[in-house]
Image 1 (cartoon, helix red, strand yellow):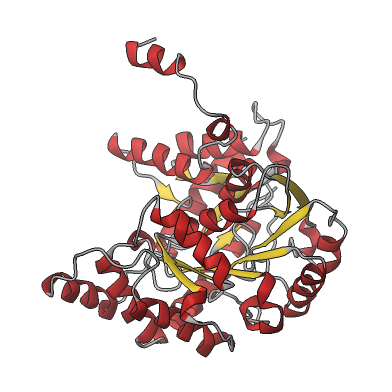
Image 2: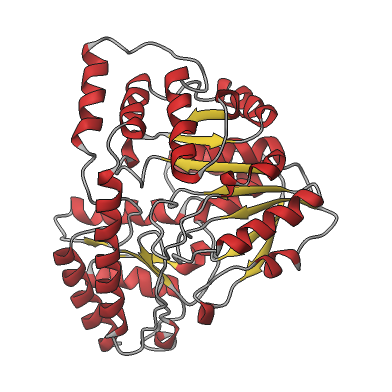
Length: 400
């Protein structure tokens, strides 16, 4: 053991940091990067980000911001111009009716989610969380001291969550319900009727509903919907959004929340003591994205549908692989449990690990999302890359 390792092992960390684990998706990215640094050609199905470049008019706005010296601090929750652009865009697309004081901009959607949960969830509070879940939900809740009550969805039903399933888990200690539609990692989409019903009974019981709508524009079911449009229940609704997936802006780090003014004020208080404002230059780019032409959003959505059909067909063609049809986002979530017991393989982590090390295909094991039988495959890449990766997966899996 090195001197540094010995020193770290002797450090006593806080209980709250020991309650959480590193992000499973970030671990895959790091491992794939190590292989690339060794000169190994890795096909990356692990990254959860668009392969499209950021649209030119958005990049131009950032360049103009630099040239115009828009490089100083702004208000913690974003400029008035940006906050107005956020709620106006949401109103135009979903019929909501938020105001500036009910809007905050953050350093990515994850940051908004973190802030919201930290100010709403306290020790012992229960948070209903559908499975499979995005990797960070559970750990952010646990960091706040809350307890996740896991809602098991049915793979045979495409992992779809209904209001009845949520209602069964409500107790006197339920503080928050987290919804993610379309879902990362399964691509499942809740119906507008079920979303409305969850919000209705949650409001009656004084329970908060947090809707992570990072992929709301990548809905392939024909039922694009935001709970933010249910303004009669606005006192218990939090909408978390992001420009990352909608406008291919993952690295720009710009997210937002729409919620009652008191909640937004609390989130800004916490943000004022952590990151302060989102990057000023990025704010100008975000305004251009939200106020500018929206054709790029639909163009990307149509391409994802084509890529989805291609990758699902390819996965289903591999003997032993089962895969539901995702109705949104840009992930397939194949069941690879038929390979357990072969050649020492015992888990999805074993499959994903060997796929990376031996076949040089990066995927994310399902354990990080709360299931044991799956791996997540991102199809946000070119058809050529999909074919290269599918060929490697087929060769490796059929050899087990």
